[in-house]
Image (cartoon, rainbow, N blue to C red; front, side):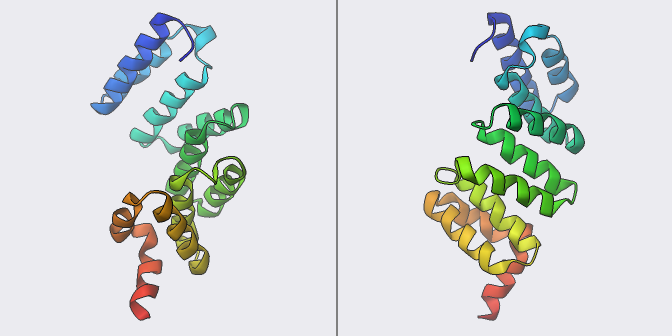
Length: 163
């Protein structure tokens, strides 16, 4: 991570507070970072984590979309942006975000394909959802278990039961 030693320490503290669900303390740490370091990608990434953990969806969208456009190589900004949109029930918009991210991250990101499977399932695009889920599971077998209980994939599971 770039930035000063103090910035790195504050980011570390903020992550610890997020892990403990102490969101105001995490925000205090991030807000105390020197102004010239606040826009570092690593700091913005932790701010996204904070907003998602605190269920502050609109704030997560604002920070994540900004980071994704400034640093498109940062996969987590695209994933966080789409996830926050999904939580705001803007599933089509979430899908569009990940389709843009797929150009850069699709070959290596199982979570991108898994989330696209979820969004496709919610949108009734079950053939695409099935293909996306298969890709995610090939890339990372842990998604097989996650898919069994994910409410976003309910329509896809129901289709499988009918066959």
